[in-house]
Image (cartoon, helix red, strand yellow):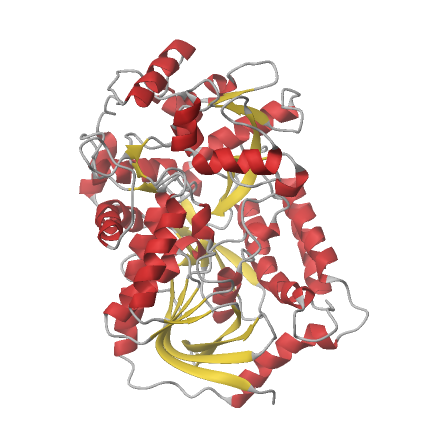
Amino acid sequence: MANYETHEFDVIVIGAGGAGLRAAIEASAQGATVGLVCKSLLGKAHTVMAEGGIAAALANVDPQDGWETHFRDTMKGGKMLNNWRMAQLHAQEAPDRVKELERWGAVFDRTKEGKILQRAFGGHTWKRLCHVGDRTGLEMIRTLQDKGVHQGISIYMECTISRLLKEGNKVCGAFGYYREDGRYVLFKAKAVVLATGGVGRAFPVTSNSWEYTADGHGLAYEAGADLIDMEFVQFHPTGMVWPPGVKGLLVTEAVRGEGGILRNNKGERFMFKYLPEATKHEFADTEEEAKRWTDAAVAGTKTDARRPPELSTRDNVARAIYTEVKEGRGSPHGGAFLDISYQDSERVKKKLPSMYHQFKELADVDITQVPMEVGPTMHYIMGGVRVDADTGASRVPGLYAAGEVAGGMHGANRLGGNSLSDLVVFGRIAGLGAANYAKAQSSFSSIPEKEIQSAIDELEAPLARKGGPNPYDLQKQLNDIMGTYVGIFREEKDLETGIAGLEKLKEEIKKVSSPGSRVYNPGWHLALNLKTMMVASEAIARAALLRKESRGAHSRLDFTKTEDEYGTFNIASSDDNGKMKLDKTPLPEMPADLEKLFAKKEPAHA
């Protein structure tokens, strides 16, 4: 058997973004020994790409705000398909988590009175996003990793986990390798927390970085956990579209929150005509009213004007831009124009420093002088591991999940800013749940050598094969299938074609070849990632086919209405033969006191 190093921890956390760091900090605070495993370098988590702010009803700018309104906004944004208990906990605990970050050293922008400043964002009734310019995620990661490092958490960087190990039905560890030289490593653990993020690299245009290959989704599924809500894939409406080397790179929603205007190539402010009837009353219906709102936001004063139409939910804005481009009204490079150049240039540089430098350095565009070109980019998946709201536990004993890899919190569509508060709220809950579970285990499980050998054999198979398909060719095929047949708009014949293509591709992946050494072999890394990306892609496509309606981020051209009969969860799991099966599961019943919140009259907007 090949050599491998061994480490023992009460809890191991896989992923070192906001959710993983917060889980590790909490488990450690409960007295558990904690190992934190990250695929990249510490500090390079995808959380840093979340720029606009962290949503929490602090009511520092709009005193009318409260957790009840945040809860209602989240549920309405998710088209009532959210796990209501997760949405409730999130809304109630987010303010405490933000104040906790502040105590730990996070430096937020401030009001004149010295309170944490909050800005408007799509789908939020009040100005709710606490921010650090447009670098909020970066400040969160800096704060959390400083806290974690000083707490004494053991960290294993550039380490990829390829398999969760089980004793009977419970998880007892994980096996993986160091990306630098391919050394193998075994982590024995009483509990495992998955915090691996999303699935973006399965799609051709994405704001996600190279790490997002559905690792946690695949690991959990193979270990016997359920995947929920996988059909709901969020395309952020504004990613860079030019130059080609940065296509898909995120353009924060904060640009629109600070008054950015969307126009087509005819100069038309097109979002007015794409507002859904159900929410039309929440938004300005003339340019004059929208301008009054923006002017008041810039001046920091109150107004009775309604929000600009650009602050509609992400799914709606993404579909609007896609439609404008498809109908011939797009910008020169296939997007729309996002303009904030009409504002004072120094204010733009102060409020949006990252965006200013990003466009200046990567596209040679000065956003204080001319509009940006933007278009939809695959950004986030609402679907993930099905977990218990109060503990973060999956249905597999000893396995927990938090952050983007966990499903249920956001329903059919996530509101901007809710991702960062989700990370720290449910990171803490999962860390606490895992630590409590670990305390109840008397000893570490013994892991049979044959299990370890099986994991090693799986890792080495692509290296030993010769003449098989190239992993980069297979990823391109996967991207083409997902982009063409399972994209922003879907219909039955396309989804069936996509699923058939995925089935063929699944067989090709079994033959993938990346010959050579384990040392500095990126082709080998991708060959291994293809398996997890395939699990997520199949779950997305099959769940999308099963949901014969349009709801939130899931848009069917052949079933354009939202239907009550599909107010259910779609659950993907593995059957006894290893085939993926899909089941529709009723939503948990919401308590009467929470139901009453949806009968309340909408408040006037600030």
